[in-house]
Length: 146
Image (cartoon, rainbow, N blue to C red; front, side):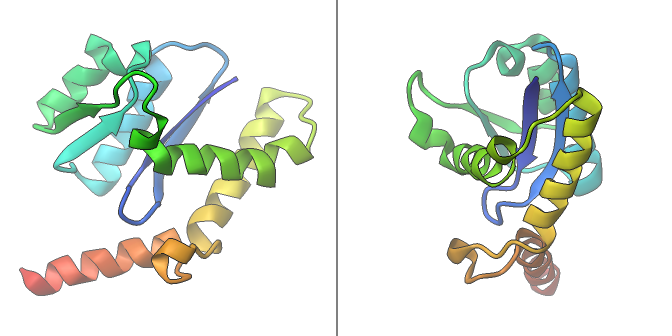
């Protein structure tokens, strides 16, 4: 199974995610569009150089929203450290502890875990706030500044 997550780097909030049994571009574009429609366009979007992210289908969505595209250099996992940490947490807190009988079961469990991650799991880098709390505070600060 293949998993994509769209994450706000500043707050570690997972804005959207998708699971697929094929490594095609469609599920990545769906996750991207969901995040953009729910949360708006960031100034910049960072990915690695996977074929799904360098595809015309994916990059054309970013260009249509006037988003700058940033791609990590080959072998530069530290450029994408926040999503790598998310994958590590997910694997050690959930995936490696369970045995899934089907993709449907996995998807349901991922829904539970991502909700926990965003809503209840405090982060040291966020002063023990959850990603949802940090994201909401960031929006409040932007509104106050406007």
